[in-house]
Image: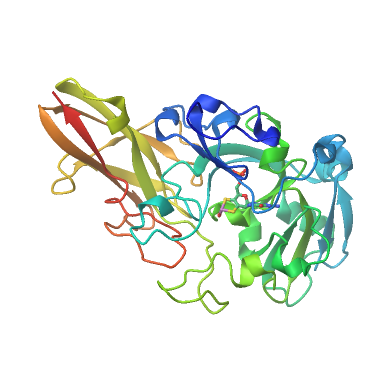
Amino acid sequence: TPAGKPLPGYASWKNADAVTVHSATTIETKRSAFGTSVITPTDQLYVRNNLPTPPESIVADRDAWKVQVEGVKQPRALSVAELKTLGLDTITMVLQCSGNGRGFFPSKPSGTAWTVGAAGCVVWSGVPVRDVVAALGGVADGMPYMTGTGGEVLPEGIDPKTVVVERSVPVAAMQDALLAWEMNGEPIPLAHGGPLRLIVPGFTGVNNIKYIKRLAFTPQESEARIMAHGYRISPPGVKADPSQPSVQEMDVKSWINSPLPEDGTQAAGLVQINGVAFGGMHAVKGVEVSTDGGKTWQPARLIGPDMGKYAWRQFVLSTRLPKGTHTLASRATNTNGATQPQERLENRSGYNNNSWADHAVTVTVA
Ligand code: MSS
């Protein structure tokens, strides 16, 4: 990133040309770097850390890492080595920060002004949480939540609840969840949560706890600040509180990755307008593309492999663009019948932006 900040040490192996470094804890994939191969290469995937990254030493002996499992009939600590004996599955999933698209909010909420690049499509391998739970006698009675705790060593002298990365999701999310040790064919790098990460498919980034040290089935949601007050859909100007909805299940969303204004002036004629689309908790049913700012829409074609309902699909509209300026937009629909809305849902912290209008791009053709 010649003009931007340097890559931080723990992510020095990232492809500097493919990312924008916002800060030492926030690195965004460039819109022009997503390509059309479905999977986001690990060295181009965004990073978002709420705390400083743990030391490299935690990935020195990956199999020795332990997770404490609680709120089951037989609670105990399990090593990664033991987890590997209990079950195995592979799932492709869109990992997307809750604040992806915040940069399009005119209200300029505080937090990183991500545009589209706090997201990627990643293949994860690990043990299904339900297999771990079965090995420990099942979930204990009266536990409506699954709570994951990050393995960061917390700064001393402050109430841990104010800083710990600990999130609760409804226990039903366990059905598709993994305790993962591998991503895109290699052990999960420290930057992305190795040696062990909780993967909750369909749920926004923050619910996918890195370097997980505790997985608990709990009677209540975590009282950590990141759960109780952080990541809530608060009305504009209203302070966050636990009564407001938490940022959890993702919504249907798509955006165009090519052509882009930064590609410069396009030659008039045939163009392959392409991008990515995902359905949140449901598969993508279809994508429409507009070349006139949303006045008219044409069906796009889904291309590339279908890697399951939690993955994104690539789409293309092959069309002719005459000379002039054209506002290109995409609008996805999922198999549950939800269509991407024109407008974002206004909220204080700029979460869950899936507005098609915000994600439109204007290109010049000469
Ligand atoms: N985990 C932990 N442990 N820590 C931290 O900080 N963050 C979150 C998740 N998880 C964290 C965790 C967030 S917030 C996000 S997005 C994600 O993660 C990211 O991932 P990557 O791998 O990309 O970095 Mo927003 O919703």
